[in-house]
Length: 109
Length: 113
Image 1 (tube, one colour):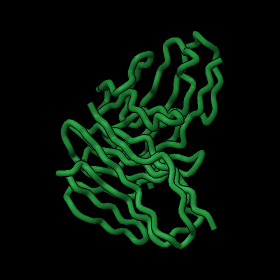
Image 2 (cartoon, rainbow over the protein chains, first blue to last red; image 1 turned 180 degrees about the vertical axis):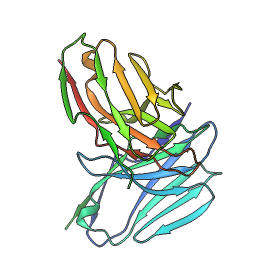
Image 3 (cartoon, chains in turn orange, brown; image 1 turned 60 degrees about the vertical axis):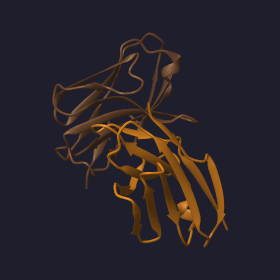
Image 4 (cartoon, each protein chain N blue to C red; image 1 turned 90 degrees about the horizontal axis):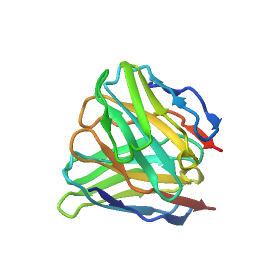
């Protein structure tokens, strides 16, 4: 089966950096996605990793280590609007995407 | 911009009723998905479809069925609604490409009383 773990909640201060970890055990691996979901809204796509290493997109970066079954999402220069849930999802065999439970990030002034 | 539209934002149904949740996407995506989202459990895949008239069971298909008669439309059916099916239901679509992300609709919050 699939198992994807991420912390339930994190708190950080405006302007700081937060790192959200995701570990996974899946049968097959065709890529890892990160989504952002504000309360009451649909998830929106943030990043995709399929090869080991760091992908940078502005204030957000995502890292993958396939051998360790590990990824993280790094949020820099935190803003109040970054308060949201962050979802880690792994594409295993075929097109099936399995999500972790999500990490709720609270940004404080 | 991809648009995924779910027919209802809020729905209240009685136990035993047959419930239809409709989803339409306008970007000619091959893949469509139905998830439910519950606090503490995250997003769980109910059913998905690779093509018209094709369907595959996800992780929690029990109590649900789906229909995909046209490429743009994917319907989720609760044959006999039960209180444990009270949840937020999210439809999504994607291209048949490895790195294609899911595009989600705004969700339908279903309450079964």
